[in-house]
Image (cartoon, rainbow, N blue to C red; front, side):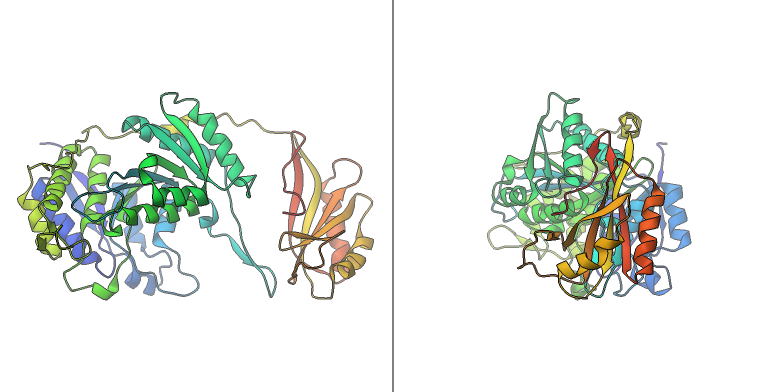
Length: 481
């Protein structure tokens, strides 16, 4: 008897139970070799005091099975609750989000009949790290973190995916013209790794024009790799371009665990009506079956699903006169897929998958860690102050400079306002005062001395950022940024 794979399943909220019933029914009928462990997740678990949407038993099941098929989740509003998706991705090390976005022309209405794009999104870093602080009455900050290892892993995963799936091109979406250090690092690593895959074309686009081109001409793209926030936005755009976000599944892949889900939400407004489209979760389940080495079952389901779409049996979200023949509910659509198991589509190309479990060894191919020569050359000190004009603040702070560190500039919301500032800049109560070393690198004690002077003068500093050179190159942006 072939191996049975344990998987953790959470129905989630809203339409989750209905579409999960449909998906489990199809997988069972197709002969999927699964041992399902069901766990509660979502709104009810949040309300029991678990801020991540899963309780200890749920996390234990996922760590045991290492495979998680998740229905859509409703997260209660309010401080303290965290997105289950974000928590799972960071807790389980699910660094890669994979979203295939395919058009099903002429059976699902779309303006882009030749679209077949895979969005690969970094999953653990960027603004989604959720590091936020209220610093003043006026200003809240969110910290964007991009690391070399995190960028290397996702970029190499994208090229490995392209090679394994016979894709021809990988395009990076970045905003390095503005975020020169964070996005600039990602793009630098992209081209370093691209050199290891000479058979695959590599290019990049600024994310705003890239998203516009994707919306207008998606057939120009093959695989897109990008940072966390951009990837979230771009993948939803791409899914909608295919005809409906209800058709798209998503995989979250890590070194030891993986999570699979539909990309849509819990849709409480239609819950319990039996009309939800289970296709997104079913396509996620297909990706799960490929991941666990049951590619034969994945292909059997996927081809039956394509034949169902081809035969005009559509749920309400994609049904249209002239394209659909039968408007089917959730259960009836699942039954139609089961009836077509063993069949393949006639017009659309059939699919096939390997029965070998995909392997990822990117963690073993990170570039060697070479420590740079780091020299502390200054500090940015952020203040809350509402005492007047920038020149007034400079008059207050400049005399507090030390022999080692001198005030050289003041900015407000990234705009330089002293010296030689623009009088038209609108200022809040949040100021960045830059102090630079006067005689070569300084020690941390010089910063402590400076902060002591500010404190003694009654100045409210809210944050400090050390300014360092790495191998002689500034590791910080200019005071006008």
